[in-house]
Image (cartoon, rainbow, N blue to C red):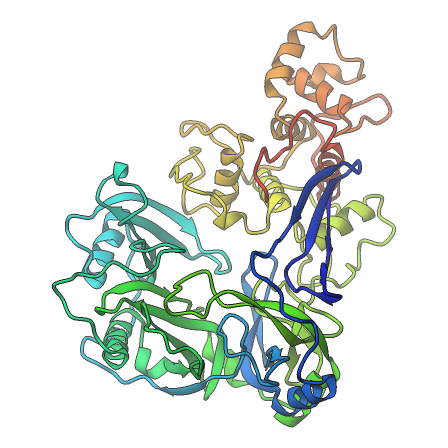
Length: 584
């Protein structure tokens, strides 16, 4: 258990946004982390040229909202439903000029859009008869992205796509050779089911580097020429690009007269003339038209579910709701960018009137039906999750279950029940443990790409990612000839062994077996793993009842929740954390 606190820093009596002090404490009150963000740049005078009233009027007159299709996501990132929402666009106001900052890092404006023309070799999408193998995905990437033949596959792994139930993605790294280092590597993500290219990153330049490496024998191209190349590539990689996408056009900062180091283009997915939130494509080319980066997010949506959605409140009403929830404050704000220094404005501290929401910084979307505030798409949890389960009140494990529900380790069923007395299977237990570390465990398995960790666990198993995550932390040991039996109901003795593995006391448990004179439990003769059971009880992770341990009893969701919370309470008292040094 740990706690985090954040404190704002005042400079010349004015809050400096982002320059805060952060303190972390463990469950016993010991300081575990202390950090402060410093600025290497000077701060201007705290006296603004524009008055507060002038800034407020400008903000009120220039706020914007955009109506979009917005997803509601569950704790695992999968989308449960869609709704129509107004997305606010509010920007800091320069306290010297009284205008919005002309800096892309801090400026949030509703873009204009233009059509994407179709080109030759338009890609309409497909579904492969079977999931692509690593070689098939690599070859598809080579063909579509024209990856040089001298680039070999250095690494490939198949992982679940967080937020998309059932989807698998190939993460492939191309390079000259394993010893060549990061420079020159190409990273590609391919959808294993459809073969769609989801991302491409060229490591030809890194942060703080002044500019990309260009071929001195080739000419550079204009932004218009780069745009045409980007659209050709888009039509080749994105399904039905000219039908689904529009190009987002944003005003360029008037003060930015420096020569560009690259060309970037953004394309937004539309349906019924409305943007689909987060479904967009970003393409970056170098000055000679070579692809640097490509990123595409395209949710698998039943468009009929969007067709039935209709707004009730008007744009004018949404702007009124936004203004009532807006506060304007004088602050210092760091502008500019540490990246692409030839293209971006230099990093400076500016005095601004910053706009933010008064009440909830997380709920940033206005529901277009009832005008309520909802969470934005990224990291959102299902809105129904906070509802009090109907079968939890008065349960002996109510506190523990509520905590795990709050942190999305557990969820309710469609009837709003948590089912505390439902028996847990082995696979469900390891899923709970993975989610207890991070709900994003499916995308936090690193390069641990073992295909068959157990005889009954492979890439098609619903528990594959949870098992890989557990293997990564050393909670399980892979053995392709043995079965994990994920659908088998979990017993108390099995739970004791799993808890000792998570607490990283397996070796100690084995040593104790030979030295224990015998367990004092009335049912000790029924216990096989005596060291695990004895140690789990001594550590307070499990309890006995009426002098018995009941090793063959099945474990319920409530009992599993109590065991996980006992692990939480034990942190700081054990020799090491259950997650090792991982910061999840």
